[in-house]
Image (cartoon, rainbow, N blue to C red; front, top):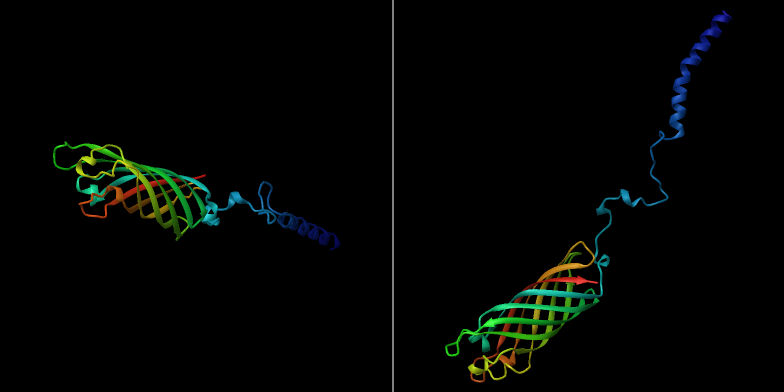
Length: 227
């Protein structure tokens, strides 16, 4: 009986050894070639983009360049004899705060006279520069609206307007007014685009015996690059 009992015990031990080996392998850790998460480091490559919230603090701030293209027309004054024409600006500015910007720009527009002949219909340009102070409200990380006060100096490039009685049009004059815009910032550090429109008063484009005030109305699309 002792001999048979020993053989039975040996058979049971041999049958249990594979299961024990499997349990021991499971206790030792994952199979060779796999990697467990490391709690001591931030594995950025494994995070989805949404894990990092986008805020305006991630964008570039400071000096910027801005260019716009649109159209400008006049009401009263030289608006009685000139058509709406293309208008463009390019300027440099600085973001003092994310809600306060200053901007200095060069600008120009082209128009065609539509007054009675003679003289015949003639093209003329209005060239000048402007300074603006903007107050901006940032509604989201991408969308903002702003309101600006503007002051400009300008001159008409030809004497065609003086023939119609606008004697001050060919001397350096001033203009002042305001502008409203909306801004959309791309998910990039430097770029945004927007739409803007405004109204200015042009005293030098008024005729003494004509209706006043002479107003310039403009609208444009712009692109901004912040360094």
